[in-house]
Image (cartoon, rainbow, N blue to C red; front, top):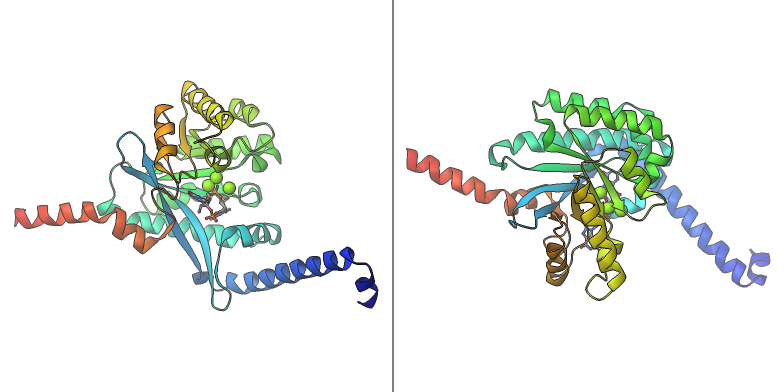
Length: 291
Ligand code: C2E
Ligand code: MG
Ligand code: MG
Ligand code: MG
């Protein structure tokens, strides 16, 4: 340590590296422990809004880890570790099953057009037959396949394009929509559009953030939307935070919006109370009238 101190910035670097490694190994240890107690994980839902009608047409499931001591941990802090240790498999399975269970529990209150989108990572796609599992799970819970969307990123497709294509096609064939997430941030987005038949693309928040003032971002997001629409794909704009961002995207005929402007991700209870009760009330009233 004395040596390291003498090296100025290097010691600072080492200390930081050390902290990061310690943090990583803490998360990893805790993650292994949590795997046996999956109830520490929670599904949070963020609504997706049809920009024309203003209606909620679905939600994205975003995982959270409620650690008894460390508090609420966001996916960017643990998904990559879960991915490299393989723990993503049990966690991912848990997520898929829980999403299905919520869809079943809420089925009486769900609008006919309502989906939950889940994110799957590389290890899930390749190491285990996750796609087959997803279809089995839908079957088991007697859910229509269009209730579920799957979001994948380019980085996941690169690893083995042929296999990815085969797996994702099995989802499409079963009626599950497959979406390309974080569109525009990868290396060869256009190539993948050509090669895979996605049902839709999600424009990354990076392109939306400065859309009010940045003419390049306006041009790029406008071009992405019209290209996607020409190719018969739907478009979700991620990270909408203001009315002016929404207004611009509407003029470009973007189909769906998602972002803090509408709502931050919510716990499943909060989501149900906020977005599925109107229906509940309407139905309850109807039932009372009938009586
Ligand atoms: P993503 O799939 O691109 O999800 C969008 C992220 O943007 C979410 O962060 C969401 O909370 C955030 N976001 C949405 N609207 C806004 C906005 O208006 N402003 C800002 N600043 N942020 C917004 P989150 O929940 O932290 O998730 C981060 C990433 O973690 C996700 O990016 C996804 O790649 C991954 N992830 C989340 N849940 C899962 C999961 O169950 N499995 C896997 N494999 N990955 C997951
Ligand atoms: Mg996503
Ligand atoms: Mg995204
Ligand atoms: Mg992302």
